[in-house]
Image (cartoon, rainbow, N blue to C red; front, side):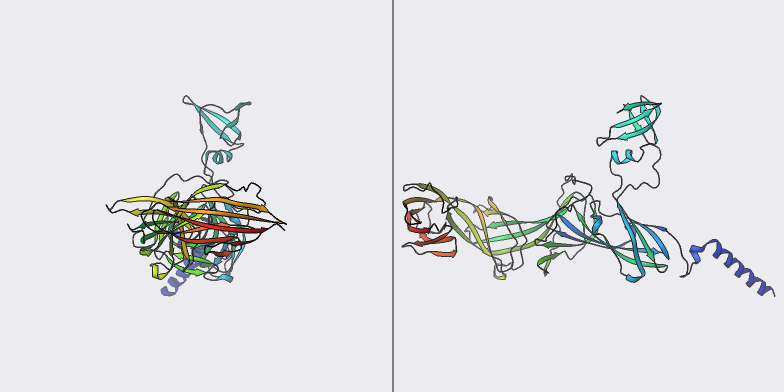
Length: 485
């Protein structure tokens, strides 16, 4: 009998606790309306950051969220302040059909003086001057934070003294927060992926090319430079970089306006950690095998490649700096133009050159190792995206000792056509024999004749490749016939 009474007593206690604490003992049939869930960085499982070299990034943020059955309000913080709120997507990786989105809102949060003061328009504040605290009603505040207040029926513009505000209302959001209204079929813990685009993140490639003392080989080192100007830190993120020109419609930028300039410049080098590359769609993806942290307002560098034995050639190119059009009227016999030859370095992006991976677009700085072990900076150039097995050419400067002189020897217009004749002298003042490529460009319907061998690589270009012995001069004679109709 006593055992039965004790059992009944325990059952009654259980029922009483269940009534008072429905959230503790709730089953799957329970409905809870608008349960507010605050989801912070402590709920994060994983973070993936894909940065494009066009100033945007794709963020995939995976978090655990415990949903109640019915309508839930999830406040998700620690997101990018420069998020494009129209690009947000939510996916339950646990049960995609178990959640349905009702709506979502993105609040950038209060981040400056004006934003704080605007929350108190129409409310009482305190003005503090010389230790005296005076109550006033805030009427308005402008973009520079200047106030208009009501002080005992008098309107005061930009009052002196400091400002003291009442306690911050609990509903005011002080940091970027995404509010997600979601309907859940059951009480369940979901792994949710939040994906969105954000501005303020960019990357570029920077290369250092160091020539040997004979200009026959070089050491090529590539670095990826990340610029995080998004005011958000991405901790322990899987990092992917996309090289290629993606199509974007105009108008995508942070709705907060112009982003702030970088306040802190910090260079971080991860030794021994390189990117792994692979193709995807029409672009190329570089993935960092280890997780990394991309800090807000930070410039970060990670090594991309290092090739220590790249064969190269040094080329000399002479080309007219002004484009030649068929309607030019100022061509006169005896005209002379003098130009220095361009010094160009050429190598092939293949495995034989210790390379063979797609090279993302970037700046190449070129140095030369001297006999005394010192180095000189000899120029720089920019490269576009270079696929494997393609030729790379770097224009590093003008050759001091290789000069071209271009003289018009004849000019006439005959029966809807014009004829021009030229003599180009190439002078080599160096102490070695060199090869020089002389490039001429013409537009329209044209033909050329010359005793010097030449090539026509395209419809507008002719190239003379000539050997110029040291301390000598070589002449190139040619005549071009251009139809005017």
